[in-house]
Length: 635
Ligand code: GAL
Image (cartoon, rainbow, N blue to C red; front, side, top):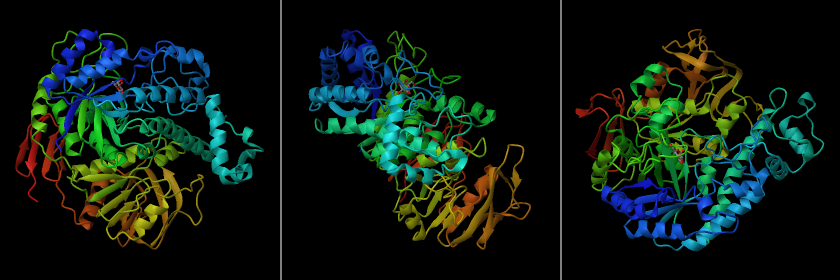
């Protein structure tokens, strides 16, 4: 299938006379999809019960008649003011107990039943009206769950729902006390009402309590989404999706994805580099106008997994954004490159955010495809070129990767609850593994933590996994490829205790972690083969074969057959060596990619994207700075 392009549009922001002109111009640009409606609740229902859908009827009709396919959002990310007046207790409370008030967006607590009911009602009304509308290509639920740190709420509604969740999961208060180890510090609860939320404690709360609250909060997002999906399923056959974010780990996207047909995400490469990556200033300077060469790809692969193979970019950066600490303009070519990169990872559609720059309100400094005065913004030239190119690509099926990296949201929460070292970040650990493999020219799949089938893979990696799921454990024990796990993998029970026998407890690998230390930036541990361990080191005992030692002779990586355990967080040099050896063991060909150049295989094509500002050459092919090359694959 040829990938499609699209755009996010807000008809309610513009006079109605403009809609048809806008639609025609979108089609002339080569766009197929237009996403609308996700923030329009107050326009659809200005007063409680006073419905005003005529404008949306006309907007859908005009867009559709002009040849666009509409993605319709449910408007539940922006409850109108009257809703908050009606339910003042629907606001989330932050960890200090302060309400997160009306006046921007996402001002709701996922646990508030009154708000949930109101959402179901508006979704039903929308589904009744547009469920069979031929112009609706898909439905988007809400917008960016978790955005602006909104997954966790410490409201009374959340506290009540948390207690219900605990009752369901633990059955009796005695079981909960035992499971959490509440005997420690006299924390024993006599009844469910004794259990509050794990905020505002004098020092850290019990990690078992804190992790239970994180699991609960994630489940609240999933059930909030599910309730809307169930309502719509009765009313439409169009696919249902949600648009996720970059480096957002507060809820389990795999769980939410189970209820949906397509995963989409919002890709803002330059904003992410400024706002969401810890890399050194030289790296940020080098990629200032391009974004990090691996961050987008990681999310493309992640959301391909969350969407079970069906995924899009719903919002692609078109120029400077408004929300990062600094917001430089992209190099010419990047808007095309980012889209090609998504397509190379199997995206069925790439939609830009947004059609016309808003002259008013919060996002007036956010670029768009056209300017507030209706002239083309600089990016339009690239999009026109891209539109002509993508129709020529007849098949965008990604080649099955031979490498799988496990990604697990519970692990992200667990190591936030108990970092042990201030800079131990689960996402970062997995991302460094991913990035190193991409620099070695690899195609990668991201796998969910309960993956039970590893038969398509030659190399599987599971760094930092809190607890090894039984399915994955069974799959690993019969896996005949190369597996590299650790550091920190399988080191806790589901209730956040150290298991005995001591971890990592892997079949066939005779090792125990008997002591764990975290390392400050000034205290790395040297490795005998070169490079260092940073942030983290686990002291191992046992008889497994030692592959890496510290300069003091302590085991740092061990193996038995194809299964290896890595007992620390390697710096770049050590990570490259360790992963090169793993690729060699798995007999996967290595291409050392030049600075900023990356490759990804579709079934019939290899796509090269050059994040560097200057031309780079690999395998005899030169790709211009901020440029793209697409080559037919030989096999
Ligand atoms: C996304 C969001 C959009 C818009 C955009 C600006 O996070 O979904 O509504 O705010 O960012 O970059």
